[in-house]
Length: 374
Image (cartoon, rainbow, N blue to C red; front, side):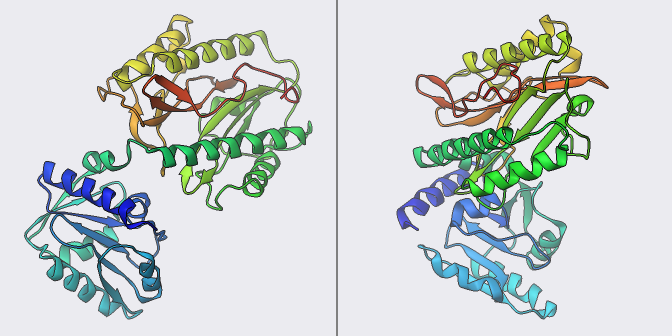
């Protein structure tokens, strides 16, 4: 780990805390803690919390069995390990709060990630502190990726694309969605993805493809089916998230037409996205194509979401979002049309805003093609 790398991140955090009138940030295990430390902790029954004061060194409360990880940190910190005796846990939090002078202060937390488990220990150790949701403030830490982060995401996209191509090459009519998902997962891991994938692949065929977040079933892939695959890889803990829809043999004229509309909508989003354009404007451009084709009611989700250390993060490409896109922001464009009981089509690409406009990190064909033509 390079100390300068983390010094820059911590300096940026201190600036964000000051701008939002926060005295510290408290993070439990998750992508934000990893971003600021380079360390990976799993959410478990033993709490792990990192405190990042505006004034002073970071403090960590963690189980003794995890303490050795801290030796990798290239910056000054204080550690407050606790034993397996649960009676010792509150004391470790109290010691950390006292060392950081954090009681009666304004402490930011990530509401959608901070569990009641950790929050109760925090409130018990700092009863006079005010715990404030800080999602929007902390999003500033990770929303603009640097060249190294973008390179990792590019590698994750290439890993995912190759894994799908290899899976399709061995696909047979009659195999189940579950079997396809298992082979795709194997190909991702053998192709270099981190063991912890961004999410379990979505493999949905026939009518199941009308469910945007379908779970692979024992349904057999059949001639005339649409096959929707939503999958991703992780490289250096940065994610890709891609969706493509394929035809197994000949599909209906309606499905071909829908696939064409979705491809046009995807292209509209990729064309308009650039520095200075709002996230809401991108969503509008995509949604307008689908609405004009008469399928607006069947596009039931936002156009996209930010991508990086998390599968879903800022910026969200959604209606009315006034956030202005800036160089280094990464996100998906993923329009879809879903006809209940019939089938659905989604085309999802991973994008990065550049000084010249917008670049796609994903380059698999977007038109509806028969499986085996890749």
